[in-house]
Length: 116
Image (cartoon, rainbow, N blue to C red; front, side, top):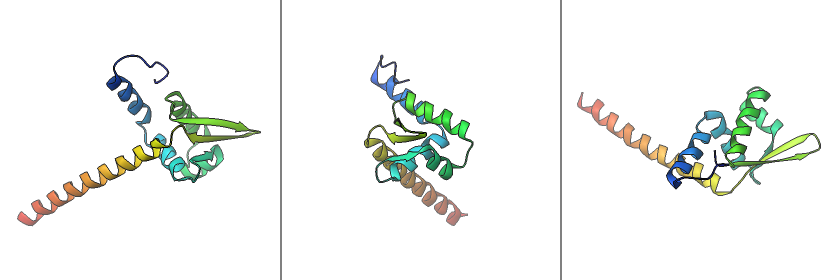
């Protein structure tokens, strides 16, 4: 985890990506990124994601441990925010990479189908 910031940078980066490596955690980050202030309450996240509160809590804890999100309690509501605005940019870059990669694969498949 990023709480143990020791070792080569590539190992620290790998650990960060391990912390992101679950569809629910990516979805949480996408929702937070789409929010104007990059934050949402747990209730809002639950409404968008549609999983049990205990499961969401575990994923949010992982994101907190990896310092990707922060949390703030106001009364009984807990609000989560992106820890850094560049996280939204990281997700956008991944989206572009995947779109371009999949478009290339689609073009290759179309070429194979045309030759068949």
